[in-house]
Length: 473
Ligand SMILES: *Cc1c(COP(=O)(O)O)cnc(C)c1O
Image (cartoon, helix red, strand yellow):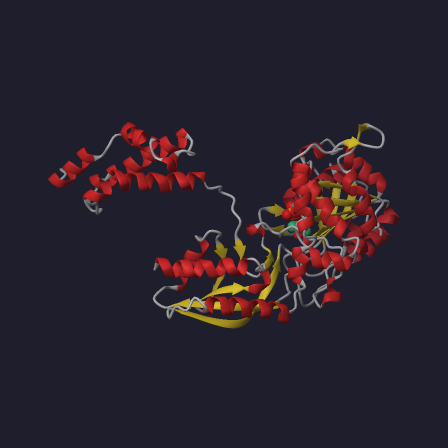
């Protein structure tokens, strides 16, 4: 296809990569940009312009080819390249443990300890009292035993890893009896049957989807049965005509036939949430007290700590687990360990834990406290004083998320926003592209900000995002 004359001349006007690099080299704004990034950006800006010139369906003007226009594009490209990919975001969804947004945010104590341990050497695997090599788990083992009542404890990278490690240690090549109602899939491709297969354990399903009885477990026991496993139905619930066997009853037959019992609690908690007007979740202490041999749970679900898999239980089994070479592959990192220890210490005083651990604080916030925050945001946004902005206060429900308390609707107060002349999807996109991004939800043509998951210092940032949007429009 033949280009028209104007486009032919545009093509000739396109500067060479070397020339643009030379000019950029004289500009202070490019001083801190690594050479490789700058070269890549200059090449891609020129290449993009060439594509536009060659496509006569795309608009291009002479000034788009000016040196300053090209440098401006290079600057945007370089700035994007230099911005970290992992960013702070504002969680306006009301989902407290939002797995896509990092699940739990840490207590200040935990954040402080991470930075301390990250920036200096530590006694990670060094026994200071004896002056010899120590265990990585000793930092948290005693405290986990104290809070849970277990004989022994250890931690790995995450709960999926904890379950795999326990199954591999206890039940490799043996049958593991699990209720059909508990063969769960947790988001992100964690499925009990798949993990079981990877561990070398042989899944023996018993009961039905809605009802499993003690006799189902008992009659399934054979000479090669290695484990009775209970899995918490974290993210769903079976209602209606249902029956499940308690860990206590499972422990009874486990003891009778000398078969260990394991419970994967998923979102393990040390707090009895029914005391705070929420639904009851089984606690780690309760599971340990029933006599379960091994209990596993996540560090970053209801515990409100860093990503980790926590294993507590009987000393003989924990000793075997600790000797499994897989522990090395699933090993917890020192920054995580620092955060986990600080988080666990807060649990020594339950009231302190609720106040200091953001996940617990947000889950137990009263409607009135949320409504006060909502009023403050409402007033901040009103002060923008733009006729296009309409703001409403609305009652909606927030969710716990993170595969915990799936049936629980937490009454919450939200701000709903409509901008005249903009679709709600455009508003949502604007907020998502803000610095920091604000992730809300859309309901009834409104952009919804649920105040349950908004931190105090974020109210002003939300106000700035909207004022900025109106300046740009
Ligand atoms: C969430 C969950 C897991 C996986 O835990 P991670 O810490 O995300 O690896 C395993 N089992 C159950 C029952 C869960 O709810």
